[in-house]
Length: 164
Image 1 (cartoon, rainbow, N blue to C red):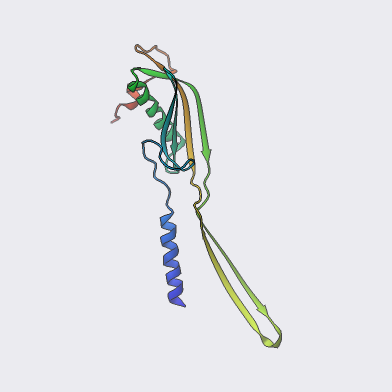
Image 2: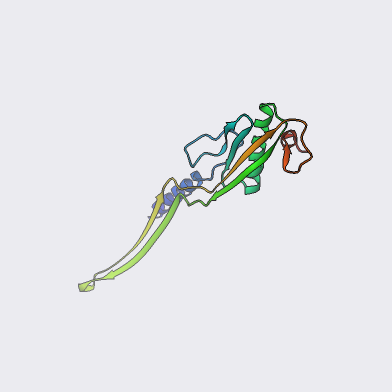
């Protein structure tokens, strides 16, 4: 009996460790819809794009927004512009639910003739679950050089320059 409990505990620990959250990486969003992390973009006109970045549970909303703006800056520079203005901004956050659920029960019963029984049950459920996600969507309007001295216009080069 002790060996079974030890084996059950070990398997439970392995299963829970396998359900660790997705690590957010900076790159194109790859994977099933609703589960992919990374960036995506859609060109609307010659100088207008919708840029989005979806982060997993390991990044804050501010970090997800910073990475969306970085991608916007890359797109602007790749297309010969110097900066951009954010026309609209949308931030969606979804809360996750655990892929592992554990439940238990205990009971006793007594019958005629002195019959008695007791039992303990433990159930573990594994499902795909859903992790927390933060999706930042920016609609940007690209601006050529020279950039106006306007705080609403972002200099693309300064957004992707390495910080020390």
